[in-house]
View 1 (cartoon, rainbow, N blue to C red):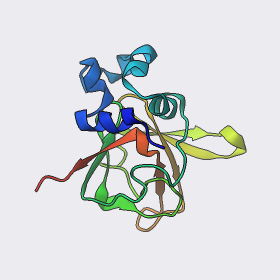
View 2 (view 1 turned 180 degrees about the horizontal axis):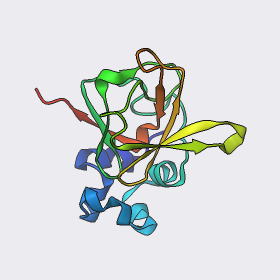
View 3 (view 1 turned 120 degrees about the horizontal axis):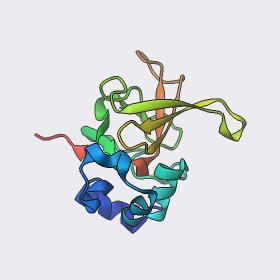
View 4 (view 1 turned 90 degrees about the horizontal axis):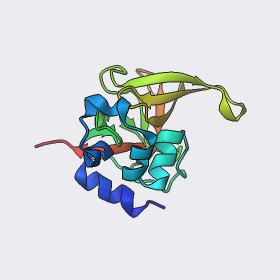
Length: 156
């Protein structure tokens, strides 16, 4: 279930705006300050590499035109042209925006599996994982937690 804090943060933009900090300084934000502006679920997922429940999140079946930005710092991460329904229960993208310009990949051997974690390059927020079972042409599936991203509708 989504918290009220998550829904209200989207209306006002990324969490960092509540701190009055420029996105370029996001790596300097303390964990205490992130706790002040993120809901407990958002903090657990983005700052502690948690995972939200599948199928009960905001963007799994959301397909409007626009961009998906980092919930914590607001940098662009994905765009709707690469979003697809994978059936995994989380938002799925076949590519990140600008060939991983704002995404970093990290080897993850937790939970007895070999995976590739993806984080925001700007603020180090945990986003999810990327797998090699996506559609062509990339063959990749970025499996992303809804609470780690904010949707910005395409301007008409």
